[in-house]
Amino acid sequence: DTGVSQNPRHKITKRGQNVTFRCDPISEHNRLYWYRQTLGQGPEFLTYFQNEAQLEKSRLLSDRFSAERPKGSFSTLEIQRTEQGDSAMYLCASSPTFRTESYEQYFGPGTRLTVT
Amino acid sequence: DAKTTQPPSMDCAEGRAANLPCNHSTISGNEYVYWYRQIHSQGPQYIIHGLKNNETNEMASLIITEDRKSSTLILPHATLRDTAVYYCIVRVAMNPGTSYGKLTFGQGTILTVHP
Image (cartoon, rainbow over all chains, first blue to last red; front, side, top):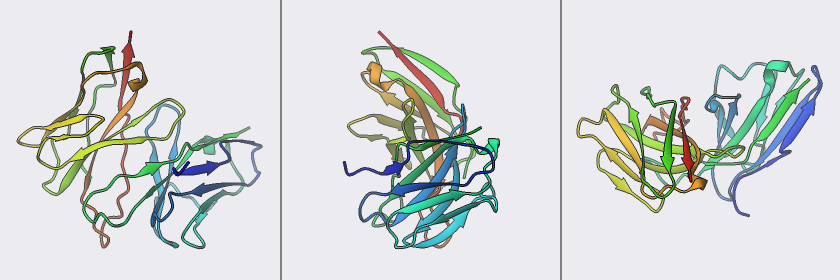
């Protein structure tokens, strides 16, 4: 499978614990995005990487959230001291860079986080 | 990015064409219209995009009005597997200096295809 992969697919954690999610984009895709989706809503943008550089962060990304893409390939999203409001689907998407005007993003299956 | 308005839900009979409307009356000249869909428990899937002209690919057709204030996504022969939430999104052309291409999703249209 050459699509975007995310691990784990499901995570249940207790309030106050830290969690980390991983995203493996499509090979050679330089652009990587993280989104969050709560029940009944469309995905909301969290952050964007071009290669290893984090170039844009949403105000939704509080201090408890941190994302990295250390070698410009896979990315991790960490949430510290989880709260019940963090329960959501966390989606990763990647995109190639050779299209300069318009392009599509390829999404992974998401990681569903439940904070109890 | 311009805001879009879509009906919350629509029904379609299997084998018939599904026509999903989208209003984007505040669209700017440099903004594209994108359509994505999300099947239950999966990530969103790109369908099609356009700027001014009508577009067609293996999945769907996109009809954009001449004033670009609205568009229609057409699934010519809907199947049960087309049941999903369909999102219409407008965004500026990719510009590394000012726009990194994030997508702003609304609530979309829940399309239910029934036998």
